[in-house]
Length: 164
Image (tube, helix red, strand yellow):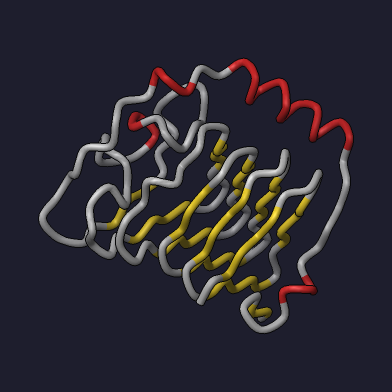
């Protein structure tokens, strides 16, 4: 197990021209103004499952979440679970999250990040899950990021910050 807060230089930095070009095209084609403003969803911490209920696989699209509103939209300690094989994209900025958000990526879950993403507390990746970050976006993780048999790709000037 690799803890990024202790050994951030071990993060893989891999360039992939074809993958980067595809993500650039996706980001340019998506109109981020189509997504609703964040609306608080509950009075206590909740578990959110990625259900990929829309064709765009966009993090900011409420149809992609099991509760039909965005996780982390209130100041509770929500938990986000991407199950085995789930695929999500962050092409619109997702820096709205409040509270101590916990993101768990399970076996072969994939997250393509081409904009800014703020995760309140920690990111846990296991079993071959993959994050690919491109286009100078910044992923900010509160206190800890842990990879276990997983890959975190940084490309094109992107940055990962573990602030805790």
